[in-house]
Length: 275
Image (cartoon, rainbow, N blue to C red; front, top):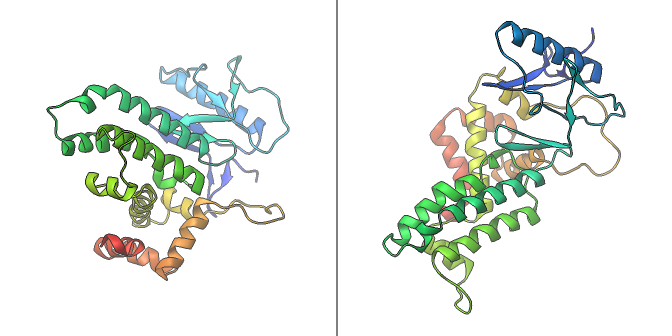
């Protein structure tokens, strides 16, 4: 029996990921994807729906097949990355493109609120709260699934520091340390915030049924052999390293996550200095 998508569990393949009217078809061959796309178009028309071919994109990985994908005679654009549910899915599988996009969007959000930052009526506390809810929330959207290298983390932290200083009107030659800046604005270092948010999210996923898509994804392994050489650093490997800091394994983490209060204690243990 041929695969209809990614071999996901012993009982079924992962053929598509859907959310509202955003659909992502998954196939292991171009011919298979062609058949799926045509079936989707036909079934959609039966319900009075039509595919927007200009917005539809196709991304291929590890293949030499360059034959174009056609749906109802419309050629679908091939891309190296695309946006799905607000996050960038990149052909390389990394997070660089997504983080760059988040920084640009957060910078735009900050610029739109310039009257707020320049206001002499609003207190510093109010401005920082607006920054957290309208700028930092944009910056860290989807960060729970990021694998963030040191250089990327530095970019994120520099962004936060720069705009916090603008809000507080701290310009050269005035100078304060980053630690003091974070203290007076109630901020945690970005890497700690991302790590905390990631583990809260992981706990939420571990409380789901074993067959849930997101829970399977946490331990799913791509079939086949990996390339020779040192294994590439990934989000999953970073999770295992952090579990090592806590002194627990994956099974123990799964059990601990079922008790929310116990799980919060585990997360706080990652950063004992924060209490």
